[in-house]
Length: 239
Length: 239
Image (cartoon, rainbow over all chains, first blue to last red; front, top):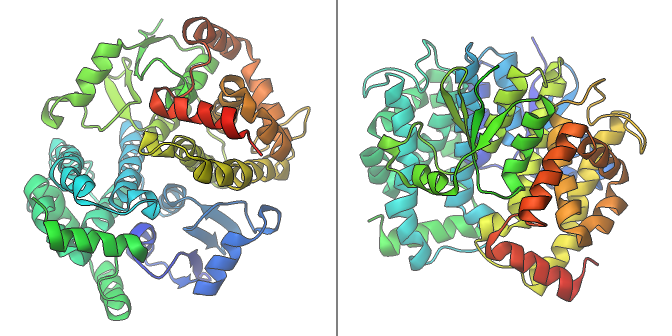
């Protein structure tokens, strides 16, 4: 049995969740780095870091002593290692494209890591226009590749791949931890919402989510920006 | 001879420039979409778009009738097609990581697509702390892989690969079109600055840059945010 991976990410879902879905799905064992170690490695002088990087997530693979940062780089690294990438060149490219979209959605919902806080004037166009457009983009991708409310995958592959795990980690986490957003997601992307729920019900992923709920409750992205999202939902709703 | 690629990106360097460096390097012929066509395809209902996507860059490959959006997805697609990806799994992962870093730097220098404008209080920590740290990250990657002021590549590959082209497109464009930033770049990342200049001197890329200079001058990212960057440089400098 391999030694566990070491994941440096704060104890909350957000960008770490996509990596955890992949690790859980492939049956990998991983260690979640201590909170103090995450801050320490991030703040070290670049010269002293085990690998030069700006911010978590960072993954250490003990099989080859390799550190890799950047959410999408970690995901692709794991997907290549654990055979979760599509065989066709165009579907691999679409996997990359969807990971880029996911990264953008995560940036946008948190106003780029909480660089500013939500206000009525920014929240309303986000939940009524921008977020719906993102959802329509995901939905058309899924339905163009044959997914339905009952079955299928994002790119029409027979098995769940990186795209499905990442898509589900994005949208299921949002529905589960910020349930006020569920009607928006289900309305504009019913097939993607259903796929995300199917992925989240896979036993290894369901166990991961249950453990997180026990430890962290509904925590989503953390910090003042999570408070800001919850304030907007309470005060202005989603329509 | 193949039909030309069609690149949908505004007539300015920024995110489009990385794709153009790759296309030029591999000797591809490409068409730059008309300004009006870029806006039209971006604003179409998702259902009517040729492929569901949020924003340029978008590339059309006539060889297989394939549209691909998201800068990093376009780059990886082209690199796989034209043999610009490293052979080793860890170097492929580092390529992905560096593309993620590049995307973050492009976001940060433009305050995330101009969502706010630079002010003295944000500009000074950016040019004296954050940008230097990014540069140190690039520099350590290059020097860890054996690059010097005279020779070498970002990941120690024999030939220029996607990582080198993308890195050069990021930093050379910044030095060339916002020359006030050159001292910061040369100070914190002398090897990367030298590598970027070597890449930019490759004949196909040099020809691309010369044509852009003739048509667009020093235009960098365009819009109010470019004016804001230039105002900061003029008023507060880079130290």
